[in-house]
Length: 152
Image (tube, rainbow, N blue to C red; front, side, top):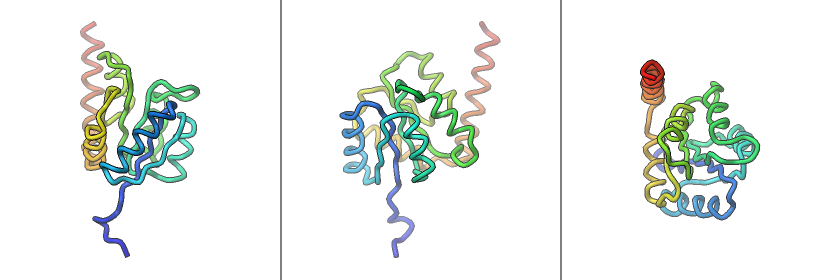
């Protein structure tokens, strides 16, 4: 029998670039000691989520079909997946993109290229975040977005 502290967390990585998907998967497995599953697009990522129930997801933004924002909104909108730690990993580095990623439910917003160590650290932090902390962070973000609209 495996002790609870020996359980390897499962991470689902969703990215349409097969080379990057392999690199991210290898880095998370080797440095973070995670069990990692890859998905090549948002639709496959959503299907994989309900099949494997990962402890955390790393999601690219720009993908065909279902993009990263849509995938995150779908996951956050479903009670079965709403509390899952989500990390957005993208080449989109403008403030408006970062805000859109966090507003769609990302716990962390990372810019490509990212070092494997930084990705592992973000996954560990996201997994350690409680559902209450996640909900509170989203409420603060929603309040800040309302203030931005009023200022414009």
